[in-house]
Amino acid sequence: MTAQRSEHTRDDPFPVRGMDAVVFAVGNAKQAAHYYSTAFGMTLVAYRGPEHGSPELASYVLESGGARFVFTSVVRPTSEEGHRLVRHVADHGDGVVDLAIEVPDARAAFAHATAQGASPLSEPEELSDENGTVVVAAVATYGETRHTLVERRDYKGPYLPGYVAASPLVARPERRFFQAVDHCVGNVELGRMNEWVEFYRRVMGFTNMKEFVGDDIATEYSALMSKVVADGTRKVKFPINEPAPGRKKSQIDEYLEFYGGPGVQHIALATNDIVATVSAMREAGVEFLGVPDSYYDELGSWVGETRVPVETLREHRVLADRDEDGYLLQIFTKPVQDRPTVFFELIERHGSMGFGKGNFKALFEAIEREQARRGNL
Image (cartoon, one colour):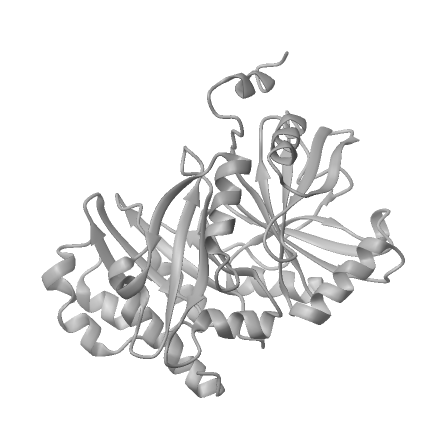
Protein backbone atom coordinates (compact mmCIF):
# COMPACT_ATOMS: atom_id res chain seq x y z
CA MET A 1 0.00 0.00 0.00
CA THR A 2 1.37 3.42 -0.98
CA ALA A 3 1.61 6.37 1.38
CA GLN A 4 -1.21 8.04 -0.55
CA ARG A 5 -3.57 5.12 -0.15
CA SER A 6 -2.77 4.81 3.56
CA GLU A 7 -4.57 8.12 4.11
CA HIS A 8 -7.81 6.15 3.88
CA THR A 9 -6.94 4.15 6.96
CA ARG A 10 -7.24 7.22 9.15
CA ASP A 11 -10.41 8.55 10.77
CA ASP A 12 -11.50 10.50 7.68
CA PRO A 13 -13.23 8.07 5.28
CA PHE A 14 -13.12 10.61 2.45
CA PRO A 15 -9.91 12.68 2.69
CA VAL A 16 -9.49 15.47 0.14
CA ARG A 17 -6.52 17.50 -0.98
CA GLY A 18 -8.49 20.47 -2.27
CA MET A 19 -10.35 21.68 -5.32
CA ASP A 20 -8.85 20.24 -8.48
CA ALA A 21 -10.77 22.27 -11.08
CA VAL A 22 -13.98 24.13 -11.78
CA VAL A 23 -15.17 22.87 -15.16
CA PHE A 24 -17.51 24.95 -17.33
CA ALA A 25 -19.57 23.94 -20.35
CA VAL A 26 -19.74 26.96 -22.66
CA GLY A 27 -20.88 27.83 -26.14
CA ASN A 28 -17.44 28.95 -27.30
CA ALA A 29 -14.50 27.78 -25.18
CA LYS A 30 -11.91 29.68 -27.20
CA GLN A 31 -13.63 33.00 -26.57
CA ALA A 32 -14.28 32.14 -22.91
CA ALA A 33 -10.58 31.36 -22.45
CA HIS A 34 -9.69 34.75 -23.86
CA TYR A 35 -12.19 36.54 -21.59
CA TYR A 36 -10.90 34.88 -18.42
CA SER A 37 -7.30 35.51 -19.51
CA THR A 38 -7.97 39.19 -20.11
CA ALA A 39 -10.58 40.07 -17.50
CA PHE A 40 -9.61 37.65 -14.70
CA GLY A 41 -5.84 37.65 -15.26
CA MET A 42 -5.70 33.87 -15.65
CA THR A 43 -3.08 32.04 -17.70
CA LEU A 44 -3.82 29.43 -20.34
CA VAL A 45 -1.67 26.38 -19.49
CA ALA A 46 -3.19 23.44 -21.38
CA TYR A 47 -5.44 22.57 -24.31
CA ARG A 48 -7.16 19.57 -25.83
CA GLY A 49 -8.98 19.64 -29.16
CA PRO A 50 -9.27 18.19 -32.67
CA GLU A 51 -5.57 18.79 -33.31
CA HIS A 52 -4.70 16.51 -30.40
CA GLY A 53 -6.98 13.52 -30.73
CA SER A 54 -10.23 15.08 -29.45
CA PRO A 55 -12.37 15.64 -32.57
CA GLU A 56 -15.56 16.28 -30.62
CA LEU A 57 -14.58 18.64 -27.79
CA ALA A 58 -12.27 21.62 -27.33
CA SER A 59 -11.08 22.35 -23.79
CA TYR A 60 -8.92 25.19 -22.48
CA VAL A 61 -7.31 25.01 -19.01
CA LEU A 62 -6.55 28.29 -17.23
CA GLU A 63 -4.84 28.80 -13.89
CA SER A 64 -4.19 31.53 -11.37
CA GLY A 65 -2.10 30.22 -8.50
CA GLY A 66 -3.94 27.15 -7.22
CA ALA A 67 -7.22 28.06 -8.95
CA ARG A 68 -7.90 26.08 -12.12
CA PHE A 69 -10.78 26.65 -14.56
CA VAL A 70 -11.51 24.39 -17.54
CA PHE A 71 -13.72 25.64 -20.39
CA THR A 72 -15.15 23.03 -22.74
CA SER A 73 -17.30 23.45 -25.83
CA VAL A 74 -18.52 20.99 -28.44
CA VAL A 75 -16.89 21.12 -31.86
CA ARG A 76 -19.09 18.39 -33.33
CA PRO A 77 -21.40 16.20 -31.22
CA THR A 78 -20.82 12.58 -32.21
CA SER A 79 -21.14 10.81 -28.87
CA GLU A 80 -23.33 10.74 -25.79
CA GLU A 81 -20.91 13.08 -24.00
CA GLY A 82 -20.99 15.61 -26.84
CA HIS A 83 -24.77 15.60 -27.02
CA ARG A 84 -24.95 15.94 -23.23
CA LEU A 85 -22.81 19.09 -23.28
CA VAL A 86 -24.70 20.59 -26.24
CA ARG A 87 -27.96 20.04 -24.38
CA HIS A 88 -26.48 21.42 -21.15
CA VAL A 89 -25.50 24.72 -22.78
CA ALA A 90 -28.87 24.93 -24.56
CA ASP A 91 -30.79 24.30 -21.33
CA HIS A 92 -28.66 26.23 -18.86
CA GLY A 93 -26.43 28.62 -20.79
CA ASP A 94 -22.75 28.78 -19.92
CA GLY A 95 -22.32 27.21 -16.50
CA VAL A 96 -20.41 24.88 -14.21
CA VAL A 97 -20.78 21.18 -14.96
CA ASP A 98 -18.12 19.80 -12.63
CA LEU A 99 -16.62 20.72 -9.26
CA ALA A 100 -13.62 18.40 -9.45
CA ILE A 101 -12.00 17.42 -6.14
CA GLU A 102 -8.45 16.14 -5.75
CA VAL A 103 -8.29 13.05 -3.56
CA PRO A 104 -5.38 10.79 -2.53
CA ASP A 105 -7.16 7.63 -3.74
CA ALA A 106 -9.90 7.97 -6.36
CA ARG A 107 -10.90 4.30 -6.22
CA ALA A 108 -11.38 4.34 -2.45
CA ALA A 109 -13.18 7.70 -2.55
CA PHE A 110 -15.53 6.46 -5.28
CA ALA A 111 -16.19 3.20 -3.44
CA HIS A 112 -17.00 5.03 -0.21
CA ALA A 113 -19.20 7.63 -1.93
CA THR A 114 -21.26 5.10 -3.86
CA ALA A 115 -21.56 2.82 -0.82
CA GLN A 116 -23.07 5.80 1.00
CA GLY A 117 -25.63 6.40 -1.71
CA ALA A 118 -23.96 8.71 -4.23
CA SER A 119 -25.04 8.09 -7.83
CA PRO A 120 -22.08 6.89 -9.91
CA LEU A 121 -21.45 8.70 -13.19
CA SER A 122 -18.06 7.32 -14.17
CA GLU A 123 -16.26 4.27 -12.77
CA PRO A 124 -12.61 4.70 -11.75
CA GLU A 125 -10.37 4.89 -14.81
CA GLU A 126 -6.62 5.22 -15.27
CA LEU A 127 -5.44 7.85 -17.75
CA SER A 128 -1.77 7.72 -18.71
CA ASP A 129 0.75 9.41 -20.95
CA GLU A 130 4.48 10.12 -20.89
CA ASN A 131 3.95 12.40 -17.88
CA GLY A 132 2.50 9.71 -15.64
CA THR A 133 -0.90 8.41 -14.57
CA VAL A 134 -4.07 10.00 -13.24
CA VAL A 135 -7.07 8.08 -11.85
CA VAL A 136 -10.50 9.69 -12.24
CA ALA A 137 -14.04 8.74 -11.26
CA ALA A 138 -17.24 10.79 -10.96
CA VAL A 139 -20.39 10.98 -8.84
CA ALA A 140 -23.51 13.12 -9.17
CA THR A 141 -24.56 15.98 -6.95
CA TYR A 142 -27.38 18.58 -7.21
CA GLY A 143 -28.96 19.19 -10.62
CA GLU A 144 -26.65 18.16 -13.46
CA THR A 145 -23.51 19.03 -11.52
CA ARG A 146 -20.92 16.33 -10.89
CA HIS A 147 -17.87 15.81 -8.73
CA THR A 148 -14.98 14.25 -10.59
CA LEU A 149 -12.61 12.63 -8.09
CA VAL A 150 -9.03 13.14 -9.29
CA GLU A 151 -6.02 11.18 -8.03
CA ARG A 152 -2.90 12.74 -9.50
CA ARG A 153 -0.18 10.63 -7.87
CA ASP A 154 3.04 12.16 -9.27
CA TYR A 155 1.61 13.29 -12.59
CA LYS A 156 3.86 15.89 -14.26
CA GLY A 157 1.71 17.03 -17.18
CA PRO A 158 -0.02 20.41 -17.50
CA TYR A 159 -3.47 19.06 -16.53
CA LEU A 160 -4.60 15.53 -17.50
CA PRO A 161 -3.37 12.93 -20.00
CA GLY A 162 -4.57 13.95 -23.45
CA TYR A 163 -3.92 17.64 -22.84
CA VAL A 164 -0.90 19.47 -24.24
CA ALA A 165 0.86 22.49 -22.79
CA ALA A 166 -0.38 25.76 -24.25
CA SER A 167 1.05 29.27 -24.40
CA PRO A 168 -0.75 32.16 -22.65
CA LEU A 169 -3.33 33.94 -24.80
CA VAL A 170 -2.41 37.37 -23.45
CA ALA A 171 0.55 38.83 -21.57
CA ARG A 172 0.71 37.63 -17.97
CA PRO A 173 -0.32 40.30 -15.44
CA GLU A 174 2.41 41.65 -13.17
CA ARG A 175 0.69 40.01 -10.20
CA ARG A 176 -1.97 37.36 -9.79
CA PHE A 177 -5.47 38.68 -9.41
CA PHE A 178 -6.31 35.72 -7.13
CA GLN A 179 -4.56 32.58 -5.97
CA ALA A 180 -7.15 29.95 -5.01
CA VAL A 181 -10.78 28.89 -5.07
CA ASP A 182 -12.17 29.79 -1.64
CA HIS A 183 -15.62 28.24 -1.95
CA CYS A 184 -18.25 27.25 -4.52
CA VAL A 185 -21.92 28.03 -3.92
CA GLY A 186 -24.81 25.90 -5.15
CA ASN A 187 -28.47 26.88 -5.49
CA VAL A 188 -31.11 24.16 -5.01
CA GLU A 189 -34.88 24.04 -5.00
CA LEU A 190 -37.09 25.03 -2.07
CA GLY A 191 -37.03 22.34 0.59
CA ARG A 192 -33.94 20.50 -0.69
CA MET A 193 -31.08 22.30 1.07
CA ASN A 194 -31.05 19.96 4.07
CA GLU A 195 -31.17 16.94 1.76
CA TRP A 196 -27.92 18.03 0.09
CA VAL A 197 -26.30 18.99 3.38
CA GLU A 198 -27.01 15.44 4.53
CA PHE A 199 -25.64 14.10 1.23
CA TYR A 200 -22.26 15.75 1.82
CA ARG A 201 -22.20 14.59 5.43
CA ARG A 202 -23.00 10.99 4.56
CA VAL A 203 -21.08 10.67 1.29
CA MET A 204 -17.98 12.77 1.94
CA GLY A 205 -17.91 13.18 5.70
CA PHE A 206 -18.26 16.96 5.38
CA THR A 207 -19.53 18.90 8.39
CA ASN A 208 -22.02 21.75 8.63
CA MET A 209 -19.61 24.67 9.01
CA LYS A 210 -22.10 27.58 9.05
CA GLU A 211 -25.79 28.17 8.57
CA PHE A 212 -27.82 31.27 7.84
CA VAL A 213 -31.59 31.29 8.20
CA GLY A 214 -34.43 33.69 8.94
CA ASP A 215 -33.45 37.33 9.45
CA ASP A 216 -29.77 36.46 8.88
CA ILE A 217 -30.32 36.46 5.17
CA ALA A 218 -33.45 38.44 4.33
CA THR A 219 -34.41 41.85 2.99
CA GLU A 220 -37.73 43.68 2.88
CA TYR A 221 -38.67 41.80 -0.28
CA SER A 222 -36.95 38.43 -0.45
CA ALA A 223 -35.17 35.80 1.59
CA LEU A 224 -33.10 32.67 1.30
CA MET A 225 -31.57 30.04 3.54
CA SER A 226 -28.01 28.78 3.38
CA LYS A 227 -25.83 26.14 5.00
CA VAL A 228 -22.12 25.63 4.42
CA VAL A 229 -20.59 22.16 4.27
CA ALA A 230 -16.82 21.67 4.36
CA ASP A 231 -14.22 18.96 4.72
CA GLY A 232 -12.29 18.75 7.98
CA THR A 233 -9.36 20.80 6.68
CA ARG A 234 -11.66 23.55 5.30
CA LYS A 235 -9.89 23.26 1.94
CA VAL A 236 -13.18 22.48 0.21
CA LYS A 237 -16.23 24.53 1.17
CA PHE A 238 -19.66 24.29 -0.47
CA PRO A 239 -22.38 26.71 0.68
CA ILE A 240 -25.81 25.48 -0.42
CA ASN A 241 -28.70 27.93 -0.83
CA GLU A 242 -32.43 27.46 -1.19
CA PRO A 243 -35.14 30.13 -1.59
CA ALA A 244 -37.35 31.15 1.30
CA PRO A 245 -40.82 32.69 1.13
CA GLY A 246 -40.75 36.44 0.54
CA ARG A 247 -42.85 39.27 -0.86
CA LYS A 248 -41.03 39.12 -4.21
CA LYS A 249 -38.80 36.78 -6.22
CA SER A 250 -35.50 36.04 -4.50
CA GLN A 251 -32.13 35.85 -6.23
CA ILE A 252 -32.30 32.05 -5.80
CA ASP A 253 -35.69 31.91 -7.52
CA GLU A 254 -34.32 34.01 -10.37
CA TYR A 255 -31.30 31.74 -10.73
CA LEU A 256 -33.38 28.55 -10.73
CA GLU A 257 -35.70 30.03 -13.35
CA PHE A 258 -32.98 31.20 -15.75
CA TYR A 259 -30.59 28.29 -15.18
CA GLY A 260 -33.41 25.81 -15.56
CA GLY A 261 -32.86 24.08 -12.24
CA PRO A 262 -30.25 23.73 -9.50
CA GLY A 263 -26.59 24.43 -10.17
CA VAL A 264 -23.50 26.38 -9.17
CA GLN A 265 -24.38 30.01 -8.47
CA HIS A 266 -20.99 31.56 -7.79
CA ILE A 267 -17.33 30.82 -7.23
CA ALA A 268 -15.41 32.74 -4.57
CA LEU A 269 -11.77 33.48 -5.38
CA ALA A 270 -9.19 34.20 -2.69
CA THR A 271 -7.02 37.27 -3.23
CA ASN A 272 -4.39 38.91 -1.04
CA ASP A 273 -4.99 42.41 -2.45
CA ILE A 274 -8.64 42.93 -3.22
CA VAL A 275 -8.32 46.61 -4.13
CA ALA A 276 -5.60 46.00 -6.73
CA THR A 277 -7.53 43.05 -8.13
CA VAL A 278 -10.83 44.91 -8.38
CA SER A 279 -9.09 47.86 -10.03
CA ALA A 280 -7.46 45.65 -12.64
CA MET A 281 -10.61 43.66 -13.33
CA ARG A 282 -12.75 46.79 -13.63
CA GLU A 283 -10.27 48.23 -16.09
CA ALA A 284 -10.59 45.01 -18.10
CA GLY A 285 -14.38 45.36 -18.22
CA VAL A 286 -15.66 43.26 -15.31
CA GLU A 287 -18.76 44.76 -13.69
CA PHE A 288 -19.23 44.60 -9.92
CA LEU A 289 -22.29 45.07 -7.75
CA GLY A 290 -22.47 48.48 -6.12
CA VAL A 291 -23.61 49.37 -2.62
CA PRO A 292 -24.81 52.81 -1.48
CA ASP A 293 -22.62 55.33 0.36
CA SER A 294 -24.74 54.87 3.46
CA TYR A 295 -23.22 51.39 3.93
CA TYR A 296 -19.80 52.96 4.53
CA ASP A 297 -21.02 55.74 6.82
CA GLU A 298 -21.29 53.32 9.76
CA LEU A 299 -18.88 50.61 8.61
CA GLY A 300 -15.89 51.73 10.65
CA SER A 301 -17.87 51.80 13.87
CA TRP A 302 -18.56 48.05 13.83
CA VAL A 303 -15.96 46.45 11.57
CA GLY A 304 -13.02 48.20 13.25
CA GLU A 305 -9.63 48.76 11.69
CA THR A 306 -8.83 46.85 8.50
CA ARG A 307 -5.84 46.70 6.20
CA VAL A 308 -7.72 48.89 3.74
CA PRO A 309 -9.09 52.24 5.02
CA VAL A 310 -12.86 52.65 4.92
CA GLU A 311 -12.61 55.47 2.39
CA THR A 312 -10.69 53.21 0.03
CA LEU A 313 -13.29 50.49 0.53
CA ARG A 314 -15.95 53.08 -0.28
CA GLU A 315 -14.14 54.17 -3.44
CA HIS A 316 -13.98 50.61 -4.78
CA ARG A 317 -17.32 49.47 -3.29
CA VAL A 318 -15.64 46.65 -1.36
CA LEU A 319 -17.54 45.17 1.59
CA ALA A 320 -16.06 44.29 5.00
CA ASP A 321 -17.14 42.01 7.82
CA ARG A 322 -15.70 40.96 11.18
CA ASP A 323 -16.28 37.99 13.46
CA GLU A 324 -14.59 36.47 16.51
CA ASP A 325 -11.67 35.19 14.41
CA GLY A 326 -10.83 38.29 12.39
CA TYR A 327 -12.20 40.11 9.38
CA LEU A 328 -12.67 39.72 5.64
CA LEU A 329 -13.07 41.97 2.62
CA GLN A 330 -15.29 40.92 -0.28
CA ILE A 331 -16.96 42.05 -3.48
CA PHE A 332 -19.22 40.37 -6.03
CA THR A 333 -19.33 40.63 -9.80
CA LYS A 334 -22.50 40.93 -11.76
CA PRO A 335 -23.40 37.79 -13.77
CA VAL A 336 -20.69 37.11 -16.33
CA GLN A 337 -23.03 35.92 -19.08
CA ASP A 338 -26.34 37.14 -20.50
CA ARG A 339 -28.44 34.90 -18.25
CA PRO A 340 -28.51 36.17 -14.64
CA THR A 341 -26.91 33.02 -13.32
CA VAL A 342 -23.18 32.48 -12.63
CA PHE A 343 -21.16 35.23 -10.97
CA PHE A 344 -17.95 35.50 -8.92
CA GLU A 345 -16.86 36.73 -5.52
CA LEU A 346 -13.44 38.08 -4.58
CA ILE A 347 -12.53 37.57 -0.93
CA GLU A 348 -9.53 38.67 1.13
CA ARG A 349 -9.41 36.92 4.50
CA HIS A 350 -7.65 38.13 7.64
CA GLY A 351 -8.43 35.42 10.18
CA SER A 352 -12.16 35.23 9.55
CA MET A 353 -13.45 31.99 8.06
CA GLY A 354 -16.93 33.46 7.69
CA PHE A 355 -18.89 34.39 4.60
CA GLY A 356 -19.75 38.03 5.24
CA LYS A 357 -22.88 37.64 7.37
CA GLY A 358 -22.80 41.34 8.26
CA ASN A 359 -22.98 42.20 4.56
CA PHE A 360 -25.89 40.01 3.59
CA LYS A 361 -28.54 42.73 3.71
CA ALA A 362 -26.47 45.24 1.71
CA LEU A 363 -25.43 42.58 -0.78
CA PHE A 364 -28.90 41.20 -1.36
CA GLU A 365 -30.38 44.67 -1.72
CA ALA A 366 -27.75 45.33 -4.39
CA ILE A 367 -28.74 42.10 -6.14
CA GLU A 368 -32.41 43.07 -5.91
CA ARG A 369 -31.65 46.40 -7.59
CA GLU A 370 -30.13 44.47 -10.50
CA GLN A 371 -33.10 42.09 -10.54
CA ALA A 372 -35.48 45.07 -10.74
CA ARG A 373 -33.48 46.50 -13.67
CA ARG A 374 -33.89 43.15 -15.45
CA GLY A 375 -37.60 43.02 -14.60
CA ASN A 376 -37.19 39.89 -12.50
CA LEU A 377 -37.83 41.04 -8.93
